[in-house]
Amino acid sequence: MPSDDPIADRDIAEHRMGSAFRHRGYALYWAARFVSMFAIQIVSVSIGWQIYDMTRDPFDLGLVGLVQFLPALLLVLVTGAVSDRYNRRLIMAVCLLAEGACAAALLGLTVAGPSAVWPIFVVLTFFGIARAFVGPAAQSLVANLVPPEDLNNAIAWNTSSWQIGTIVGPVAGGLLYGISAGTALATALTLFSLGAVLMLFVPRPVQKTVPQKSNWETLLAGFRYVWREKVVLGAISLDLFAVLLGGAVALLPVYARDILDVGPWGLGLLRAGPGIGAVAVALYLAKRPIRDHAGLAMFVFVAAFGFFTVVFGLSTIVWLSVAALMLMGAADMISVYIRETLLQLWTPDSVRGRVNAVNLVFIGASNELGEFRAGISAALIGTVPAVVVGGMGTMAVAGIWAYLFPALRRARHLTGRV
Image (cartoon, rainbow, N blue to C red; front, side, top):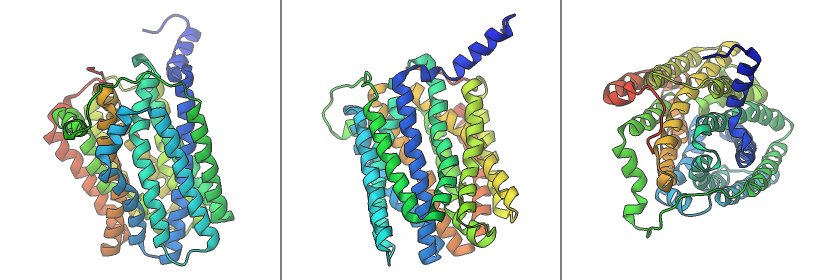
């Protein structure tokens, strides 16, 4: 209930909105994630434009996503176990340095003037390996850096670090690529290095581990937990199939060059669209978290994501395309927030790395594998039909999953059980 002092109410709201940043380790961690996600977006825009410039084949844009997803899938039993057994902070620092090395390799290829795309795909494969290891560690570490009462706030800000990177990174990537591809990749290299340094300054947090031998039983613990907890299974599988079908990001270079005719800077603007909508929602959720009907909200906004994907696919007007992308990002942010909160609050710390590795395979399948799906569909039936049909499929998935997972549909509060 509000007090009689509006200034006190405002101070309490502001404290809650930024409560996670009262913890020094989390503040450094957030900054490291921000700059690294910023760098990933610069690399993504630059390499996407460079490859499409070389081949003019949307199928190759799909391969960019595939080669980054496969390491997370093939190494899922290893990456999560490593996150549960070893120092998550150090894992993040080492992996960010590895991503920086990949950016340096891409920079070297660019300066040399590549005549074929296969060396770029080789480097992107190693880039995917580094991301496969950093993912479970980064997702799991946030719960070690703040107390339970600040975890909801930390998750909202944690997700926003990625989304803010998707706003600024693509625009900056497009502008930097307009100067030269080398300038863009050199900037990404610098940011990855900065992220690694920031992580080294994060105080080593308490991490609960259960000494176990590495065998199939312990390696598969994450899969067993997700399968047993149907609410968690429904949440992460909903995201998998919804974004797998509705993802259109891989085809944005085609829209920028051939449909909307806006060039590299316009590509950056289109890539930033979903992030703008997502960050606006993330800031709102940091101040006013979802307190009721969380499951129903997740299904409604997944369906909305599919609807706005259809609008984007049919649009030939730049402002309408950007608006549709912003609304896609806003709708997606709500489902991401609900899923991540459920996952981190319901999962014991001793298996959190392995469960997050499973989750990241689902996320990777929905994003990178979704880009591969989009590239194949565009090559077979055309870019616009591929996006529109995918958006319609996402709306259908929301309805089907609401029927298949009634416990998730009826979930009202985002509360932990462990």
